Length: 186
Image (cartoon, rainbow, N blue to C red):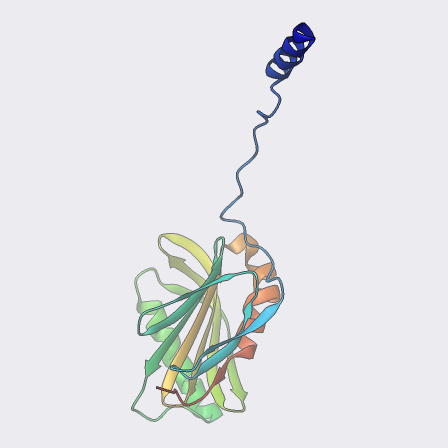
């Protein structure tokens, strides 16, 4: 009996029982949204639908939060404004042209591929799609600049070019469409 036990233990050691090498998880992989959940930042007057499977990390003013998974990220910013905010289509077109000039002049640049004027209840905005450099890496970007409630709220969503179309359709565009602005609560 003892000899049989020694043979079984030796066989387990020889065959490498329990020593299989598992591949580590790919931390850069961009998973699907896993559904959406309501996220509110009442002190900033912002609410939106956030991907349930992504992590949300609070930011420091003017950054409200970051929502991320793998190599994809959504950064939410709120910039209080005292000047009149654009509200008509003509004013939004002027704001779009000024915004394009401003982002192109920044370090790393921004190559605009499409723009859209956003007009919906409680929110007026300009949305830019394009390519930018973020932390030395080229990324595709959806950048929504929403005007309302005394502020410009920016929702910047970016991912590597190879994944952007899928992530934009599944996650970035629905998040941008869900944005609502209200008066901030102390």
